[in-house]
Image (cartoon, rainbow, N blue to C red; front, top):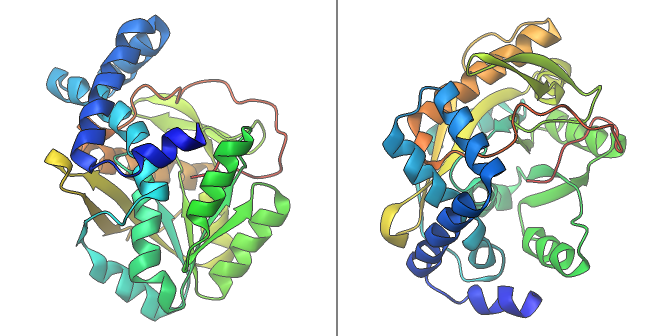
Length: 284
């Protein structure tokens, strides 16, 4: 498999995305559970049929682009809202980047590290090693780059995030991920209660860091990506559950900007698993 990843990493993005579209539709056709979940979640959010169909292909594109993002040459990236990052960095309060399962969330951290992280304000992401040795090595090599750091998905890793924020650096989180039992709260997400991590809210409350919304839009024709950045200017509640609900609402607004590239097939409303780490989350 490592050889396959190396081979695919040399392919142009347009070809990887075309292959990924086919894979996305194949999985959709062959997996009734996945198909029903994607349809139910998209309909729950009131997503138009055309966006649902594009999201099926986008899910496959997300998978097939990974070899290029992890092992291949740099991809073209344009920015929309980079000034918000510059302003937040100037405040030296630390930044918590909130990125849903939208577009290429892998490219957002890479793009930040390339443009901002190498100059001093590194981004730290929580990381749970893949079970497959070959995949773990590839991911670890990909994320060992200037301006991008990883933290273990346990209590020590959370302390590392707090330390980074208090030193004026950045943290990247996927707040629409289902955390282990005891590390989240049941709050609305597109009109239905979803178990949601409280980590983002707790980090913001403990450190006073700025919240920034970011996502990586996949451009058509394999032309690259657009990293979109928006500030979160609302005052976050001191009540942890209310604050978590506020973050969910912000994620909904972001997703509605690009519903055709959201992972509607993700099991967002599942019951949380029993924790095997403390206060952690899956890797980005």
